[in-house]
Length: 624
Image (cartoon, rainbow, N blue to C red; front, top):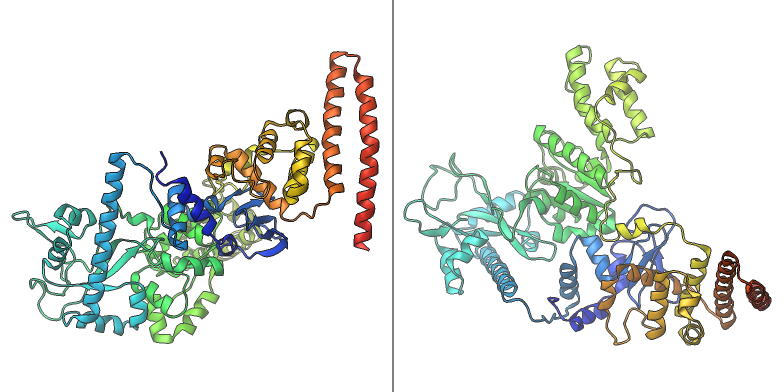
């Protein structure tokens, strides 16, 4: 049984401004009375083939056949399941969701998760107040100010401070009705080694909440301040050999480090509009970039970029700018990002930073304009990697040559034949003193190049509609006529209703899918074709093939201007196509009714030619 009622889902759908929702992903322009179009957000194209109907709230791409409704769109672009998409839209548009009766165990798990999220939200507010209001946090405020970070942006990121006392959060949470097991589950408390007593896990640290795309706190990154004087005092705000500078929430039921990007909840809309996302390493770098106006910045919280994080970057933008330290760990992070980005068809570029300098330091020392300039000077990762590798050895030494070639092969393996690859090959051959042909063979000697988009084995980068799109091959001329007829019926419902009722669906529609569509339209409201006869919307989720076709027809109908004569011409085309099928069948069976069918076809063809001539003449007069 569904978690939320059908009525709840319908209220969410009705509340969504579909033009606003889609415009965050692609620029739309009006292209008809009930249609907007733009470049498809699901595949690369230069000419718009993507359209939406803002009233029926469906989309369809005539290039890649991506199709769906408001919920499908959010699922595809945000990487969510249906429940997550529904909840996200409900939050965004202020709709309260009503739950259906749940399995007791599922209800218990959901309620437990909601309590844990509430505990984390309360604790975040407590840490934030403590940072700005307590005397103990004075040094933390001074440290953040010395990093050039202002209160306004720190509050936007909900930065706080954990008291040095061992039980402040523990006691406050107990007073709020939360138990020790909930504190352990969120990572806010742990047991002492001697006696097993609970105590606050985070103490005397600057707290950076780790927030998901829906604005919910899932965990914390915590930074200790450098000590002045002796380390090891109980509750001291210090680092020592035994005290790590950073202490993060461990993976648990809510938080998974490899899936999160710091600041993504704030950066996503800016990255989508800009078409690029800026990636740095840490918390303060991310905050400093946002403060400097680079609102598309996110942080890795470490250099081990994961496939899940790359997937999230791909949902933000097509171009990823890496502003990472060029040390060995940063290089490895970039190389891993390059391999993962190629699978997602992402353009990966590197922002050159001075050695040993991070974005926050660069902005603080030289201003935002200097960081903007570095971004403008970004280079394709393959070029950056080649230049870096070639600078770290003596090209006249054979062993160094071999080592350089070994390090460059993974980069070249992921590069399809292109002008950029040829240019890089020329650079390598020149630097290493090798003939270009030999350099190409040596660089390609190990591993096959990554499959290009559209080739066998190439990743599609999409999931929900992939099978449907792959299954849709060439469409017969007869099916195209049937689709066109249904589109015209939707474009002019008052004309389409009698036209549909005049046809025998089993006789005039050649495919099972189009028959299902015609039956649905004839049995429902042509002005709201996505609703079933009872007024519900959810039934199409049980027939995804029909759902995609209905989206296509609705979007196409938004660009049509239908007249009775045109609809009649299209109806007669279906009649002619049916008679052609009957004649073919009769000939195959050696029957004697071919002549009668042929006479009937000739009569309708004469009417069709006359009606079509009238339509063409009327169209010519309008154009004149």
